[in-house]
Length: 218
Image 1 (tube, rainbow, N blue to C red):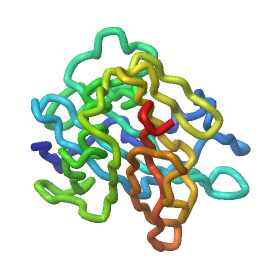
Image 2 (spheres, rainbow, N blue to C red):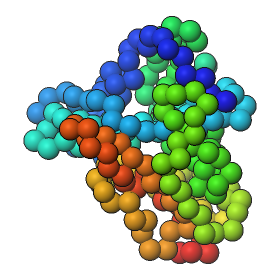
Image 3 (cartoon, rainbow, N blue to C red):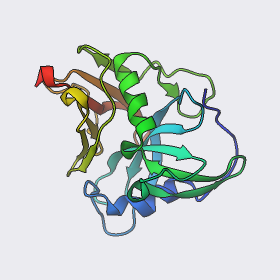
Image 4 (cartoon, rainbow, N blue to C red):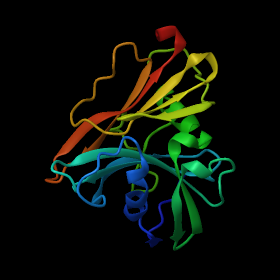
């Protein structure tokens, strides 16, 4: 079970993501550096208890219209071998010491956890409260599991990230630029995850976070 520590982070997660975000092809730049605020998200537990897994939603208000981004992150106590290009940055954690933060799409612990969530073998956890399931995170799976999570290719597009190359043709799409209120999975999807976040005025909205396709459904 992941433990949420009430302590300091230097830099903060928002500061870390602000430095990394402009390098992403799905980022929609404004007239200056990103101006981010955390808007929502949830966590997953790593069964081994070694890696933190967080689905974070941030809202950028630097442009003419606010943009909501899904930024899945993993937090590790040591570098992930072979994932140098996926490193978002490092942070000094007041309890755990130095932490390496990675774009979760490139971390096998993240992809394994996401597939388990979609298939109903894992429970979404509250983002900031210990030992508290987040029952408002919706998921579905209509395929035949278990789906292999060993994705070999990660490709960033204009609005999403595609994970492919898994056994039996499974493919994951992470919706990076979120659409407010659009929570219906596309036709033919074998599974999906819908999450929620808060707008600048405090209104809660839902949107599609992830979509799973399998070869038998294409």
